[in-house]
Amino acid sequence: MGSEGTVVGEVVFNTSMTGYQEVLTDPSYAGQLVTMTYPLIGNYGTNRADIESDTPQVAGFVVREAARAPSSWRAGATLEDYLLEHGVVGIQDVDTRALTRHIRSEGAMRGGIAASDTPPEQFLEQVLAHPAMEGLDLACGVSTGEPYVVPAAGREEFHVAAFDFGVKASSPRLLSERGCRVTVLPAATGTDDVLALDPDGLFLSNGPGDPAAVERVAETILEVAGMGIPVFGICLGHQLIARAFGAETFKLPFGHHGGNHPVMNHDRRTVEITSQNHGFAVRGGERDEVPGAPALRVTHSNLYDGTVAGISHATLPVIAVQYHPEAAPGPHDSSYLFDDFVAMMAAADRHS
Image (cartoon, rainbow, N blue to C red; front, top):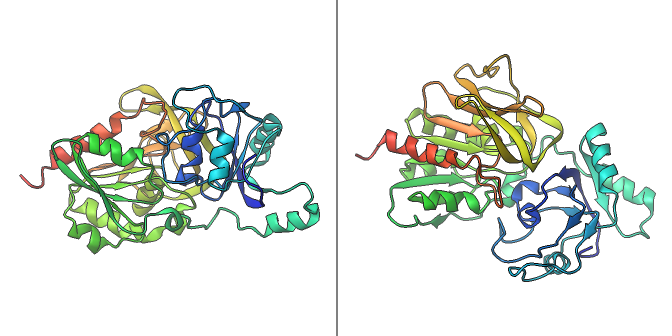
């Protein structure tokens, strides 16, 4: 399926029934071979609207069956044509149920896709030579090279500086819809350059790789938050915020990837169905404590395994969640978090 070639990466599975184009173009999947658990993928084709970045970001794509004839008035091309256009190596007719059960049992691991005439021993050496995900800083590889601005849709109320560690297009768009001008910054942007923008808020995006390898942003987080500027992070941004305040992160056995993860909001006593895509998590403690970070408390928990899914700071305007409130095509249970971020900026009222 897709382009011919040899690709190697970390094999993970995604449980979403729809949104395969968003999965393909999510920068958080850089370096990974994504296995879709839903058996038929591509049945509504592909289009230019449902993308989260300009090109696919996955290292490879694995499905049980690729639909040959898409059925949607929005379809501009088949999944096969889309993969060919962008040079994505894929494979179909795989028992994805068995593969998923293996990953759940043994954990995410390195793997690859190659032509059938590739010598197995030679290919295995190539797979084993590929670096494991631990310790990898992949954010710089998917981040923008230069800053760019997403203007506010309508009247501008706030200016948000956004770190691009692999930002999905939906995040700046949702902020724009709420009256925010968003300046999207390269992952390596320094503290002085951020403060020179005089932002009303700081947003830290999702992204791939190990958060422990992206320590340089901790200084910026602490200084910006210490000035009373609201900070909001999702996924990798959530992990980086937690680490900046002293928490630890660790590698999950097989990660959380899909659009059906239940999360408990402890403050509202409600359950949100969320879209998630991460292989690392913040280490939690008893009740709502975050070991090593006494100023942080747990605000959300993943109901699958109890891992930390959201945090806030006791005295500073800092919130973060370990999932995608900007998820497209959904679910949209958690979009209120963008409203909360805007409310925090309004409460700070730094320029009144």
